[in-house]
Image (tube, rainbow, N blue to C red; front, side, top):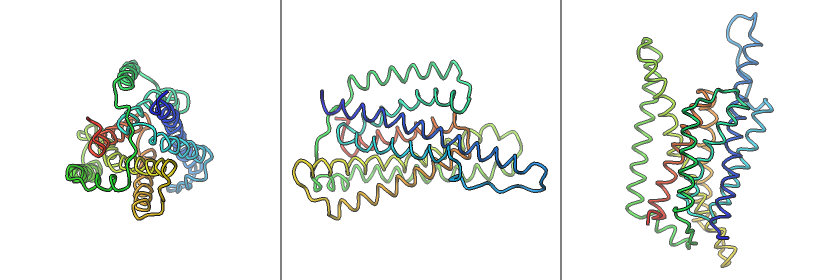
Amino acid sequence: MGDWVIGAFINLFGSIAINFGTNLLKLGHNERERHSMMDGEGMAGKVPLKPIIYFQTWRVGILFFIIGNCLNFISFGYAAQSLLAALGSVQFISNIAFAYFVLNKMVTSRVLAATAFIVLGNFFLVAFGNHQSPVYTPEQLAEKYSNITFLLYCLILILVVALHHYIYRRGEIVLAVSGQDLRPYWNMLLPFSYAVVSGAVGSCSVLFAKSLSNLLRLAMSNGYQLHSWFTYSMILLFLSTAGFWMARLNEGLSLFDAILIVPMFQIAWTFFSIFTGFIYFQEYQ
């Protein structure tokens, strides 16, 4: 059994754990809203919400979310980033079950049909996708980060983030001051723009996690010393982008409906993670 198969299985378990944790996080936010409404009955004014950390469901969700991401981090050492990032679409499948049983959301026939296409796509992905995961030296990794194609991709990513952040802020203003006629349009565009910004930045954590996983494999096989400026830079960038992704995910769950925002988050994260792997590791070859 090839290393990529091990990485794929670890990634599948990690993705399911992440999705389960995400739904528990949303359930925790729902409980906070419900408690606020119960506490505010018979009282004048708005009762401030309790800090989300006080809710047990949210804390358990954070635990599953962290465990799932740790499993995904391990998996990146065994298979190509584009393969594992695309396999993360299994979260769409598990999200249906969790949304139905955990959040009591209705699942439509169109959602089930779309899920069938996801299963079919994953079948072709595993059969014909990139199964290689070579180990690079720190010098090779650093050279790839300074490649002109990758730098151009980073510039495009910054422009995409800036554009959708502007759209989101503009949408907030429009919804606050305009009439009902614009609401259906902006109510769909707002979570989409929010998810694009979150996914574009958060997906960079996958690249840094892949680089760190590569360094760990190099240290275990060739005795590479991890204490170097490059290793510390990767750790700092990984923690920054992963922390941003986690904070935006938690905030997005409190702002939007889970059955809408969770797939949008996952689509944006998967899309940018695949393209980052394509450009940086040249996995399109």
